[in-house]
Amino acid sequence: MPRKQRRYPLTPSSPTIKSPLPSPPIFASLSFFFSKETKMGRDELCITVPSLFHCPISLDVMNSPVSLCTGVSYDRSSIQHWLDSGHDTCPATMQVLSSKDFVPNLTLRRLINLWTSSNSSPSTADLEEKVMAWIEEINNAKPERCLDSIVEFASRGEVNRSLLASFDGFLETIVGVLSINGMQIRVLESVVRILSLILLENGVNEKLHKLILKSSSNSSCLPSFISILRNGSLESKMACFTVLESVTTNNESKRFIAGVENNFLPVIIHLIKIDNDNQELHDVVLSFLIAVSVARSIKSQLVQLGIVEVLSNMMSSKNAAISVVEKSLKILSMVCTCADGQSALSGDQKCAGAIVERLMKVSKTATEDAVVVLWSMCCLFRDEKVVEKVARSNGVTKVLLVMQSEVGEGNYVRRMCGDLIKVLRFGCKNVGGFSGAVSYETKTTHIMPC
Ligand SMILES: *[C@@H]1O[C@H](CO)[C@@H](O)[C@H](O)[C@H]1NC(C)=O
Ligand SMILES: *[C@@H]1O[C@H](CO)[C@@H](O)[C@H](O)[C@H]1NC(C)=O
Ligand SMILES: *[C@@H]1O[C@H](CO)[C@@H](O)[C@H](O)[C@H]1NC(C)=O
Ligand SMILES: *[C@@H]1O[C@H](CO)[C@@H](O)[C@H](O)[C@H]1NC(C)=O
Ligand SMILES: *[C@@H]1O[C@H](CO)[C@@H](O)[C@H](O)[C@H]1NC(C)=O
Image (cartoon, rainbow, N blue to C red; front, side):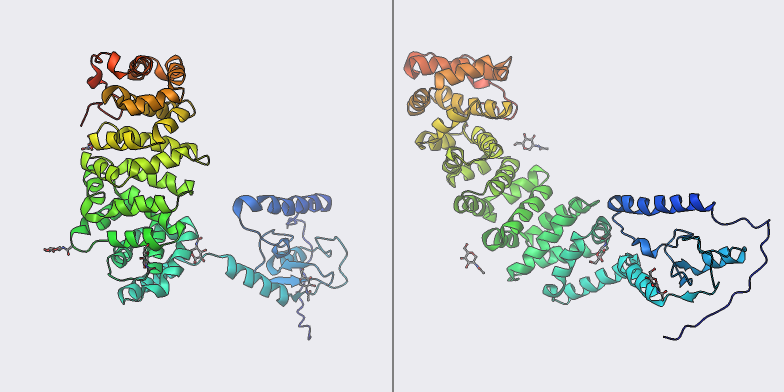
């Protein structure tokens, strides 16, 4: 390889020009310190600059690496300044130089260029160009071509997500895909995945609320969500709930989404019936059901779809996660005061026993929910079958324990426990009416027959 050499005229050493470096021993320790610093900073900055790329003099990544005859490489301007100020040593090794020539280290330069281009983030203009091209492809009815790239893009970094979220027309375009009939399930899944990724960005929630729920009368997105809940992957199903729960923010939208005409609740109940041991999915589904059960008609629909039996099975399962049990109790407390809920509870073989079994093994709030259900069944509706089941499950002792615990202190729960114990000990027929029973006011339920 031809060595292209270039001589730099030496200026005589002048006392007024200060050496760019401290005295040699300090330099050595400084250089050690800095190379160590780079390594330590790595994890925090998530940038790994190979130490070879730093100029030993300036400590910056080299623009134009050149090598001295000692084999050590420096940035051209740094070493030139060093030699120009009269030194005749190699700054890193302190060897006296037999020649002050240096040659460009092209290999190193190429490596640095390669590294720099692969590590610098593309400019905002490039990214916007990209998003624009995607929107165009989707508008040209070819969403399947680019959705995977968008998912990848949105998974990588906050900058990308906020760009997508604020990009004019982006949300409208991808939500539009959801309202196209007969779209492939994979395409729908990608869209929902993208929505779940950018959901937390500024303003997305409000926009999505409008796009998904307001457009519903004409071109609805809900059938697409239903398709995913029926045929999608578990991950996409979870993403559906994330998106739906975050956009159903007011009573109007909850009533809409859970309305009979949308056929949504049957799909959800079916989902947890068939996938009967996935606690993570159960948890998400139950949260959603709690959130949307804002009307008597919705609760009634849930009961008709067999929610009591589903919850009863969930609570009886040994593998049930505590949060799933707690949410089950919450939903039971929401449906137990209605006649159809009561009759479903009355007819279920396992439910009362499962509730008693869990009574003291859940959070305070869930224990309160459990007491509401038992009280409603035994004292409000005077269901003898349930009273018998609760008594057989050692209910008296358990309810007494609740009464003595902090759960029962100073609120309606304590009074309900008192009522329950009377009924469990003496039977429904032998206990008189509960004064003020129908006016027990809980945090979530106004206890009265409906
Ligand atoms: C270029 O720099 C690298 C790393 O410092 C070194 O290993 C290599 O020998 C240098 N090449 C030349 C031609 O000096
Ligand atoms: C944004 O996505 C692009 C392409 O997928 C990626 O190269 C870039 O690193 C991402 N930006 C950030 C900040 O992660
Ligand atoms: C929805 O349909 C009604 C008539 O059925 C129409 O007047 C309205 O413009 C449509 N809205 C949208 C957003 O397409
Ligand atoms: C989706 O699932 C339903 C029932 O769960 C099934 O009848 C239908 O054939 C499936 N569709 C596709 C495209 O797999
Ligand atoms: C929503 O519905 C619930 C239950 O019907 C009711 O208690 C609540 O006040 C309603 N909220 C609004 C903002 O209307």
